[in-house]
Image 1 (cartoon, rainbow, N blue to C red):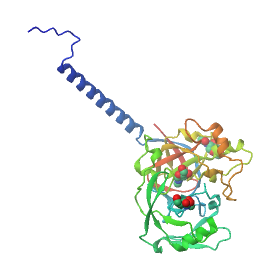
Image 2 (image 1 turned 90 degrees about the vertical axis):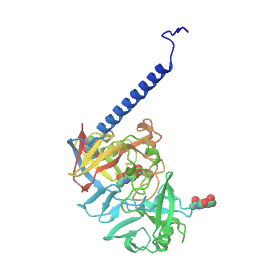
Image 3 (image 1 turned 90 degrees about the horizontal axis):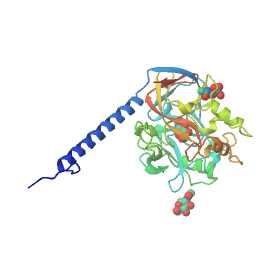
Image 4 (image 1 turned 30 degrees about the vertical axis):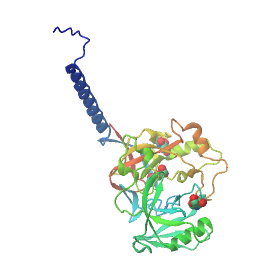
Length: 339
Ligand SMILES: *[C@@H]1O[C@H](CO)[C@@H](O)[C@H](O)[C@H]1NC(C)=O
Ligand SMILES: *[C@@H]1O[C@H](CO)[C@@H](O)[C@H](O)[C@H]1NC(C)=O
Ligand SMILES: *[C@@H]1O[C@H](CO)[C@@H](O)[C@H](O)[C@H]1NC(C)=O
C-alpha cells in the first residue's frame, strides 16, 4: 500500500488538531473578553467632582407624586432603590380589575396623588377633593392575599393593601367605588424581577431592576439637560416630569454630560454604575401640578427630534445600578469615576 498523502489531505489527526486549536483560541478570547469586562466593571479609584445633588425624589406610589419631605432629609440607597425610614421608592402601585398595572399613561391625574410620611411605617395619601387616607404598613387589612401582575412583560408578585384603599383610589382615579386596587411590593430585601429589555446591557446585573420600577432602581439626570430641552419648547417643563430619583446640578453647563458618565458617586458612600441610557415614555408629557397631558405631545415630540440615537424612544438621563450602598442627602457632592 502506498500512501499518496499530499499536503491537502486532511487526516483525522489534523482535524483534531484544528478543533483543539479553535477551542483553545475561542476559550482564550472568551477569557480575555471576560477580563476586559471585569476591568471595565471594576470600581474606579479616582473621582472627579462634577456637581451637587439638587433634588432627591422618592415616589412611594408608582406614577403618583413624590414623597413630601423636609429639606435635608437623609435617604438610604440600597439594592431596592431609595428609601427613607421604612418608606421605599415605588413599592406601592395601582392595578385595574384585570390586575394590570395602572399608570399616569392612562390616568394623568394620578400624578396629583400625594404621600406624606406620618410614622415609621406610615404614610398619609391626599388628593384634590378627597379626605386624607392613612396607611400603616405594619397593619394592612388583608395580609397574605398575594397576586401576580406583569410590569413591562416581567411577572412580579404583589400584595393587596385592603378595600379601604381600593375604594379611595377608585373614587379619585375612576370616580367609581371599585376598579382600582392598591398593592405593595412584598419582599423587603430582595429583587425578584428581571427587566427584559435591559437584560442584554453588558453592565446590568439581575438585582438592578428594583421593585415596581420600570427598568432600574435608580435614574439620574442633569438639570441642564432639562434646561436645554426647555430652550427648545414653547412651554417649559419641570424636571420632576421625568421622574428621576436624582437631579444633579453640575458645576459646568454641559447638557447631556451624564450620557458619558460610567460611574457616579454621591456623597462619600453611595456608588453607582451606569447600566443603560434612560428612554423617555409619554408619562413626562403629564404636568405634575395640573395632572393633565400636554395637548401638543410635549416634551416627547421635541425630544424625538434630537435625542433618538438608535433607540425606539428618545434618551434623557441614565439608569444606574447600585454598586456600593450608602446614605445621600440634597447638596451632596456628585463625583464621576475615571479609569
Ligand atoms: C379587563 O378584561 C376584560 C376582558 O378581557 C375587558 O373587557 C376589560 O375591558 C378589561 N378591563 C380593563 C380596565 O382594561
Ligand atoms: C425607575 O425607573 C423610572 C423609569 O425608567 C425612572 O424614571 C426612575 O427614576 C427610576 N427610579 C429611580 C428611583 O430612579
Ligand atoms: C447640569 O445642569 C446644571 C443646571 O442646569 C448646569 O449648570 C450644568 O452645567 C450641567 N452640567 C452637566 C455636566 O451637564
